[in-house]
Image (cartoon, rainbow, N blue to C red; front, side, top):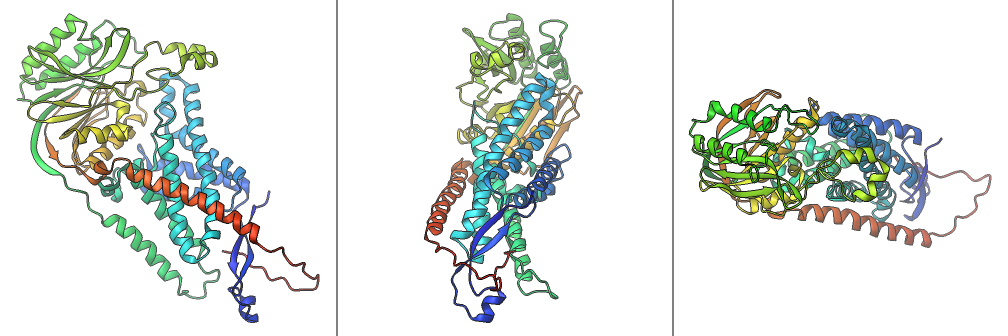
Length: 561
């Protein structure tokens, strides 16, 4: 299969033949082919996906994100919609099958394949839009400035739009694996406080797309050191340096809070066989004993740390009373609670002698993991699998902050950490520190827990708040507002962290803007593509019919770089 041709417009006289004949500038067709044949783009897509996954934890080699994106952009240049869809599908499927392989440990291969395929379809759709941008935008902005100034921004906007849509739809979306989540420890991390996750992703793609356009806009012949190459390199260097030079937004010091966080290392997975009811609760009580007299301001347990509902079980309620009284501090504990016929994945603020004084219900339970949306529709497709999920968690509506008196803390539970709007709401409602409770036991020793910790680190940078990420089995850590690690526990070991964690007031630009920057750049990309498509069609209709060429006449067509 050969590369697909692409017809562009270029002023006549810019080629050598035009200059020799003194032809005045006018539009002449220039044939631009796809860089590689379609079968080659499939191989490029597989390689690009492997590189991109390597940028995320566990490997965490963040620079790999740039060649990963660059290769797939090169593969999409000059590609027709069908070829672009196939390229994006292979790229997305390869990436997600590797990146979320941990999903197989919970419910097996079918949900993993289904989720990976769904996300790959989003990537494929976004790839079609990117290929159209490469086809249309240079026609509307045919100058060099259009190629290196407009095209990269449109491509980055379209990439951001695709990530933004898949992050919220369907069923609340799946925002795991967004490009910027690979940069939690990169030099670009300071941008999170200004632009948030979507904004950083936009910058990364824009810089990569700029590098790609500068390469393809270079002179074809390089006798010695051509004059245009040095400015091109300097332009890319200046753009990158400008992004790297932005400092983190500094929030305001508000003192500290002495937090004791407990990792119980209990048998907490959904399908674990436990010896008796209350085993997980007892395990976290035992793990808390070494720090019970450490003059804590708050004792923090992870998601599902009590396998008995304290709101219904007198035994569990008495146990929590004893623990919080012994610690002389409020206890924040994860538990499954029931109200009426509904189940909730909850976090309870428990005080000695008062019991539950506040409650947060998980806002973002995992579709097909913690509940089955449209169960009657999906069950016939996989009745045995859907039947495994008996407990249906209801999405919460409670506010995500607890007032401890000494501080206001933001609370989120496991998958909540990927919800941009929820994290922003926590800080806007006064949270001075963020508590991220999770239960990673369902995913064993896979990359899931370190991927989640990377997201928690990004949230610390984005909000300018300390994040205490506490899990039943790990990875548990305390992350400072600047993204550094204050404390961390080894996985699959019972342990505790006692730290005077920094409190912060004030809002970062990323929190103030919320999703507005994401909407802005996504809207720009989509609107620019639409207008370019309309203009492209108008130009095609206005193009004069080609004059038949005499068989003896010399050919005068150039291939664009």
